[in-house]
Length: 401
Image 1 (tube, one colour):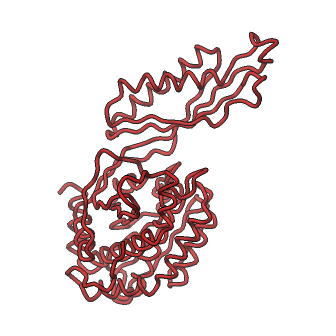
Image 2 (cartoon, one colour):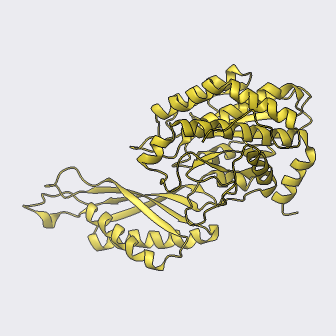
């Protein structure tokens, strides 16, 4: 995909939008270099120190006042730039993600999300003198595990924002966003070590309990609703084949389209853990954390993003409800007007969280999508700054008015 950023943008404010696109084009090398640097140096959730520092350094060079770290998370970044026409205007949040997947790297393309968010912030800085209000850039860690945005919400880092905008890479372009609610679960079984050959009857096998839990989850799936998901991995399973494991740890996720069903899924999951422990004479604990919500998509904002995107010849293909994931962007969407559109960086059918998608996230096509996303996010944000009635309409929709 090659996008001509010099093309005539959508009305209204076409002149300003052209200048935003030009600012992205002028910063092309800086934006792409940031994406590739983060891609080549992946860091997992809560450990994105170098990525956060890179992001903070770039926005600081473009005039933003940077708080790094922001709040309780060491890798969260908050940067602000006031408009030149005073504070009596909206505060628009431009978001970036940069955590990678353990053992895989940027198999979800968060390097492009970091670079596009920074690119949008660069573009808006170029027109800041004509804006009323404040641009708020938020570098948000730990989307893949732990729901870092919820920590930032709790720390007040989204306080006072009128909108939150964040692009996501995909194998399809879709402006609307639907998400499964999800929670992380860490399960630990504790047993008793013994020699696996000479005195096995003296042991209590924690790994057996974990294996039983996986079997029980497999049987549970028959009764799960079609939108529900349960999946996990073994983190610890013993130290040697001739020692009965006294400790086994698994990491799981539970997901559903219906937020209200989490209570019954949690209860059933705890029962499965208890059953596996009882069957093996071990003890088991399940610790739930990192809840991500379903998405309250704001169509007022999404419609403007869609129109701005179409001006560059890129069509909205519509949400594919058969291929849903989860994101803590959902948490943000229940606090203020939010959109989380996706732009394709590869051919349809390339699975997310895969080596193929990871490799696609550093290709020329991904670079073009990153620049386009930066442009459209900036243009949509500009409309909010320039048209108070659009902000009011977004809030009215959010509140159900």
